[in-house]
Length: 364
Ligand code: G3I
Image 1 (cartoon, rainbow, N blue to C red):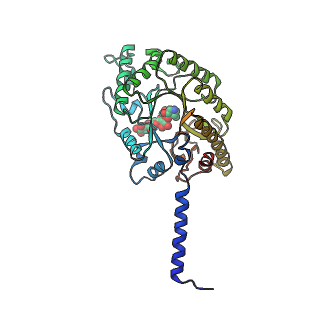
Image 2 (spheres, helix red, strand yellow):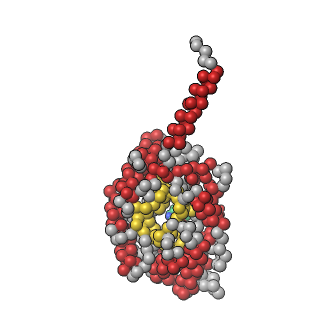
Image 3 (tube, rainbow, N blue to C red):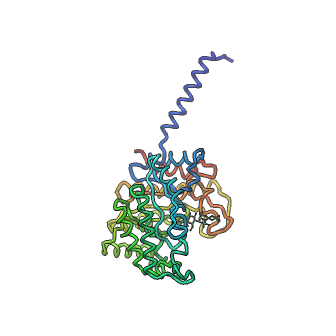
């Protein structure tokens, strides 16, 4: 066998290394691939962003936007009345600024993850707060939080999940003490108060199943038309898109984006993930076949998103997490059932869905 001169061998290895580096640097990231169409982001927990955490590097490389999965909700920011705690939220906003990423604020007014003191009489905690007391607390919370982040949050989920599945406004029977005490005014006022403090932030009303439930979509269209008619500064509707491999079909999503943007609003996909299960079916192995089906569905939805982004109707798409192991869809709705809803696996390796999404961006 012919012996290679050590110098020639060394040069060959260096050449191969250079090619590998060039190939890696030339592979566009999701962030680069979709930049012409919309900001693409992911939901994060503060710990992901610690230096030395591999998630931090992957997030900055692959995404151009961040949203706090939990630490910008009222239960964290004002756990006790008048005591605001921004430490974890500031960490996310600072990381985004260092990495040229935009930030979504999630969420100002929601019936969940809001401390019970908001709804309790200040002098008789076992009794409900008055409407005036609740609205005063809502105003203080919104204007303190939006003021703290003024100019650093591109879009705020001002009100989250205000509708029932039939399109009616969620009431006390469906968990909304906001509605029970303050009435529908809690929605209008939230947008007015947020806009007063940061007029440049895009103010979003956010909900789930709008892309799959015609009645809920009708309800959202009616709600938004009313807000606009009253001069309320709502600027976008958020489609959460907690979907599955099996539904909804692309045309339902296209229709939802079309109907909402026809009202004169931007549309954002705010919390996308894709369960490999139908509803509450029992846990099963995550096979190559189901991952291929998931990739195909992610690919067709992101092809739609690219078209809607190019048309100026869709201006942000957020995945509700980075990797499968961290997803809220593990153990929901079936305790003990692991899901696989995101683009990276629990070892931070790109899944077939990642490549399908990248391919959906097409050539720049
Ligand atoms: O912070 C406590 C911690 O102190 C405690 O030790 C631990 C014990 O279980 O619970 C921790 O709180 C958890 C919280 O996330 C923060 O991690 C709650 O139990 C848990 O229920 C909560 O789940 C979040 C869920 O909203 C609450 O409704 C999920 O992480 C989050 O992904 C999910 O996100 C929502 C969006 O905000 C709105 N749209 C739906 C979406 C999915 O439910």
